[in-house]
Length: 307
Image (cartoon, rainbow, N blue to C red):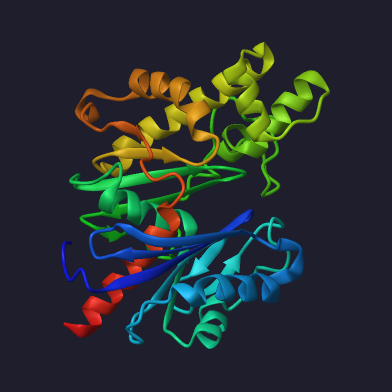
């Protein structure tokens, strides 16, 4: 969508480690932005106070614009409440993010899961631009995903469409996932999975990011862990290419660059000829995708309301 360059929307990314607020124009350009660390230890009220204080100076002049938020956790998009969240943000589950931020900012607020927001941004101006659809997988501490078709977020019947973290995958049968069950993709191909595998193999604790960095630096154990995880991810994504017929698949997040070489090889080997035209791509907006996608969702809501 190209449009009125006099208008802009504010998108906020509320993640486990950072809060990013960005002013985005009608063509997807980030006009202004600000970032702070997430005060996770201050609880939901502290996080929302910080987000509001960061966002308030950036609010567009037009008082009728909606503010978009991409938040960690499973989101009830209708109410803007967090339905489920991990302990990365203690107490976050159940937080009425839309109502709380609307009261603080005196604007309408639309809240979406952060991976869904990132998928919207990548489909709009990133890796999926000018493609009929995009499936995005976000690989960080955990694994998130979002599906966009013809420019529209596809949430499915319960709002959870595309969530691949808990798909069973060969090679992970003996690994316990954060959900408590065994054998899921997140247990092997997330930052948490990389850290657990490296620690088990070496006896030396490490974060997922450290494992990825050590693999790039040539650590043989880290390279083996990353390659195993990448192959598992690539096989799953090849199956999803056939299942979803999305048009393109993109991988983003802190662990994605390390996993993509092995994932790409496995993806190509497993992909059936009918879907050979479905590429596996790196995300094009690694730092701003969630905030830009949140702003895009707010923009779409406002323009539809006005039409």
